[in-house]
Length: 394
Image (cartoon, rainbow, N blue to C red; front, side):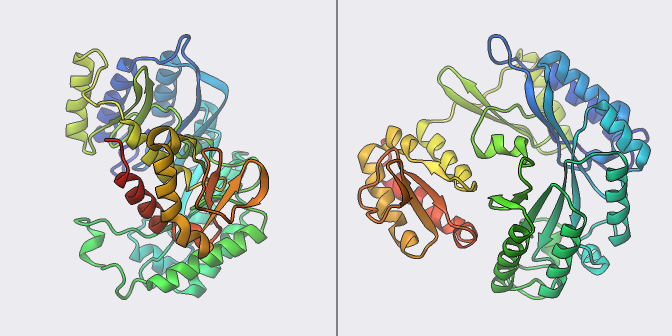
């Protein structure tokens, strides 16, 4: 669920108030799936700065979801929060409303790096925010760190990792800075050029994070995510496993099962276009023009999302859509990556890696190695896509 923010709190921002009204309208107009409809198992407030919402606004959204779909009593209900955007009364109110997991956008523990990255908070705000989380007795919280920031050194990165671990969160996410074209950030920085760290340094940052976090008891269960046992991000797992999920708000995406296959629905990314989209959505009785995903695209999503996870993917979906030719093409494509140690193959009849990769079976599983395969995931995934596209039945 994406939430807009303009750095004003929700009770003093007309932008946020109007956005919440539009969001509630979309929720009320969205058809319920399933007979009987299954209650929501996860809810995630993300995008923008959800911690600028008032407690009353969060309550309104959760009440609307509960009325429309039902929220399971054991549901994971998460909120992304930025340091310096909330006080004890806010987080206690959020918890009373139902929030039971917090994702804190720390990014770095050095004031200079935070300023260079355009962040509003500073080092002291991070510790204050974590103290508030503990005071509210929210045990399930995550810290987000970012590597590859302007002027960031290996020493900075090591220090940030050590400080994050010392705060003892249940979950830590590690992201590499991605500079999108035509953004404010792209006007000042060019990938691969100083003051951004080189690709070799960011790769070593990734490897250092893997070593330190796994040594500290965090399971590297997804390319960018580490969790203590039992604290994996359940909401995000629905995305990576290509499971059904509703999306609401600007830029949000739904992945909904339909009789003919899954349907992906994308919302506009600006408030004006989103409001227009919702008006049309209501007028159409909760229908959109978004079509069903073809089987070949479903396989692409399964590979792209599933290989992010530690267990990897079964090859059964590949075989169902592309047949034996698809398995043979995939075998040829991943052979060099198996030899390099980036990919491993596991059969159902042997608890070991498969050496004969020229005869993959539908029941085999492939996964990326940690950390080398995770680090090179884009190369592996692109090679797999190209191989399957060449034998696509379409």
